Image (cartoon, rainbow, N blue to C red; front, side, top):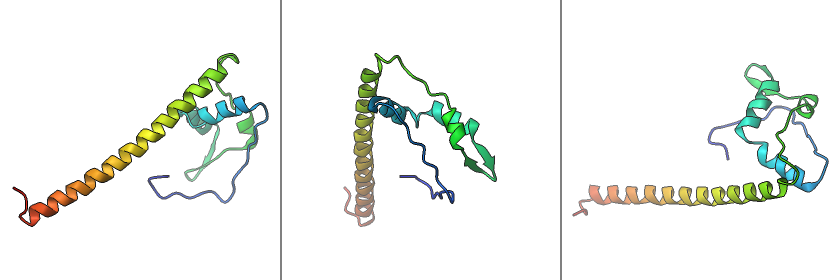
Length: 116
């Protein structure tokens, strides 16, 4: 979910990766990392505040790669940690919603003179 309104360009590109599943899982995990975002932004062409990235530019993009022997452990660890972060984010959002509701109930009680 995005916190602000957003719009997509009139076209989207599809960049399909070939190779083994573990490699594709690694790239999927690091694709949204800040270092990758900066690299993508440096190769993007901009016009009127819109960013466009071509398929040849994406194909030439350097991707950080660990040693092949470390890849299974890294992928598993990152996926587990991201899963825990997702669960924590859900818990925090739920707690914030409860806190907001409780604040509203306390304020309502105070306005009605029911607080002692």
